[in-house]
Length: 221
Ligand SMILES: [Zn+2]
Image (cartoon, rainbow, N blue to C red; front, side, top):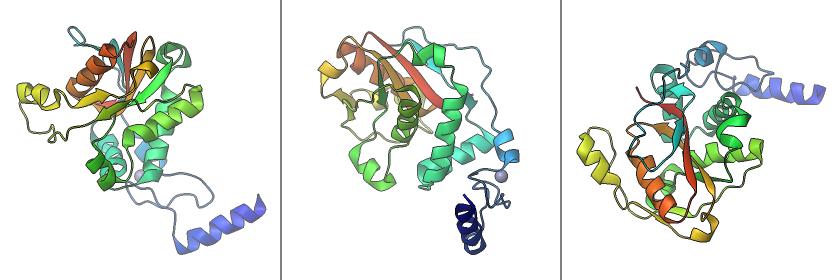
């Protein structure tokens, strides 16, 4: 422990430990990624669930609101290859979801897949980073049966109608046996219109999923 602290202090002298969002110095002996002020600024989602009628998924759980400082943190994780930020966000996700809810009602975790060219560009799938932590904490297995076989343009800036058609046919289920009869927990980083989760859920239900519950770190307003 003492040696570990000396090593950490030495490393911190060379690369001072700073909050990944606001750059303020952090306790050199801590494992912190974000400072307390930034984490305190992550707004919890207290909105009542709505808009799930005529959807293929059965529920959506998102403990945070995708805005302000949470949006910055997710951008670091998603587009700036900040894996430490992703690790901390995954921990926060696990700390905020109740064990007795969607977790115990699921048989298998399915991370929302990326198209393979995007995966190469980003190096990792942010949904998989979150899914791995949920799997570690819950003991639920992960299956990668769901694949994205079509590149889809970014959803931002598109009309509601275009957003829905944009993702149509984007996913396939490669091994339906791993989905058939299962209660699926579909994991992604952000829930916006729900169109992507809906299309993925349609494919999972077609493959025989008994239910699909969506879990995302944050949802947009
Ligand atoms: Zn900070």
